[in-house]
Length: 150
Image (cartoon, rainbow, N blue to C red; front, side):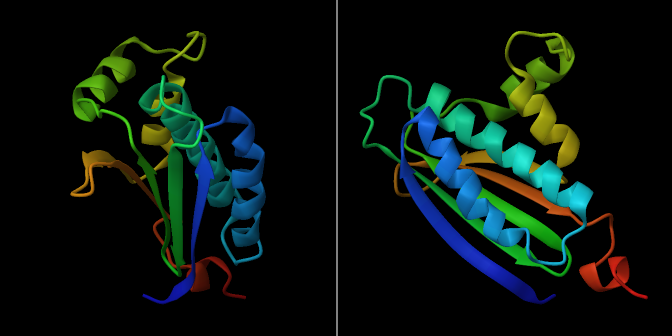
């Protein structure tokens, strides 16, 4: 497995900061990632960042950081989004959202979307008093070289 690119981005707790997050994430689009996989990862990033701002950091100061790290290998794209919120039982919430959320639901679609597009979705507390949302998307079960072989 070859690491093609790694990068970290930190921003404040502001829904308007999503524009900067997406601009930073665009730098990964130049890599030979299958278009459908890249779009699914972009959607998962939008949902993960938005959840951190709206839910994990609800009531926290605007200066509270959200940190995002992305690693792209020849086999997958891996994202980690760290928040400073109180945390929650991710597995229980995910199971509830999978049972009750539809495409017409007002809210709660983010977890369902992440679960459907990614191969790994987990949320765990970290030793530094933060929480980490980890999302990994394999490239169609093949490596990038296999996707682009002529």
